[in-house]
Length: 505
Ligand code: NAD
Image 1 (tube, rainbow, N blue to C red):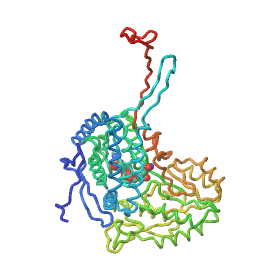
Image 2: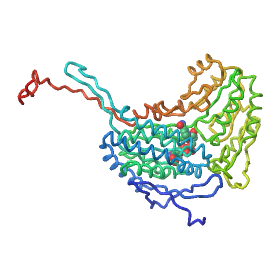
Image 3: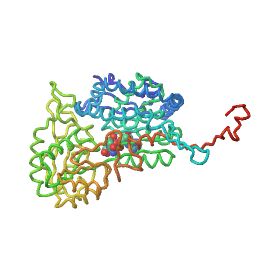
Image 4: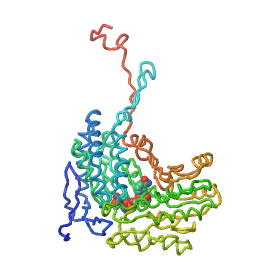
């Protein structure tokens, strides 16, 4: 492809692709080959204003649709998504790099939220108290907010937006989604699907862009709320800026998830799960396991089992070659690969043992791809930045601890609190772990405890700002505003006006 043939990915405004006039773009890569596959438009202020104005019009139409009509559109969207999700998986792999089955996995987790949202009438129906005081009824109604903004990260270009928009739309809001500029095409595919499902134009808008577009959403008076998922410093910025502008905010940040392995655990099970949770999606998951806390004396045996399994991992183009899918694809960009590599350098310089070294890893025939090999680090010092910070790559760190309590204290002393897991056959220890750990999502013999759609997703500490979690009941509360009505109608049999109208009671 010559540079002039490279397509420019536009916005989705008023129910159609909208080419950008901003003159600003960013490259989109196929991470497996390193090639630039497209450029994505970066909105200017005029396009931000246009997107929000369209969404405002969309809201005025959509919020008047009956519950039954809205539900019909949601069911149609669910059916289309279910039947055509393989197309979306290919799009995700081509821009993100994860293996196709993993892309399919993220779509399925997003689809769960769509399915939850189809039952929205039950979740937004409010409450009624008859005769709260004599002759007085009190009831609450839940209404949509208006235009809501979603800003999503690169690592789940379909699932993370689907944590929010099915519920937002079901509740009668209109959505402006600002996807990651690194993999912007999944959002456009989803927009087209909404159109086919019968959603009126303007209810689902895709605004491609960078900080300028995000700041536009954070400050526009028409935007009532912002739902953000991404790194901690940006989550904090979003939370503070949007709050200052009077908006509701969901702001989910980064993570450094620990798995605590007690000596009674089944070490084969633990090694299998550590491989899946540490290296799946090349470690680019906010719920990935980054640190294995091994309660001695199990560390040496566990390392041996993990190393043996790493040796069997196939790393390659996530789209597969010759009909065979690898276990792990590349990282999102050359810059990110170099950052991950830098963390391994730091760990080494700080005295850790690099047991398996993924630096400089190459895939034959894909030498320009952004690959990084699975890496295992032992005895990483707790003072090392490589232990304390989120690496977001296929790097698993082993820390040896002497007791259950030392492990719990270490997890609780970290800056993040997204996910954690304990592996044990001791129910009492698991129960104590669940009670004492300062983390939002906990797995008991489950390494990546992402809650199902009817519970809610969210961490503690630097992993979530504010108190609004994603989806589940939190999601419906977030995307609706409650009104309480106190009402008195006079009884026509006594002193109401009905008597005057001749109603014979
Ligand atoms: P990121 O914070 O760099 O970007 C996220 C979004 O914010 C993107 O749309 C980006 O365009 C925008 N953005 C970036 N810089 C900005 C700025 N200065 N001002 C305004 N907007 C800005 O995150 P990423 O690299 O795309 O995603 C990886 C991060 O997301 C990791 O830290 C990961 O842990 C986190 N994450 C968290 C969860 C969770 O549920 N807690 C889920 C997925 C990913």
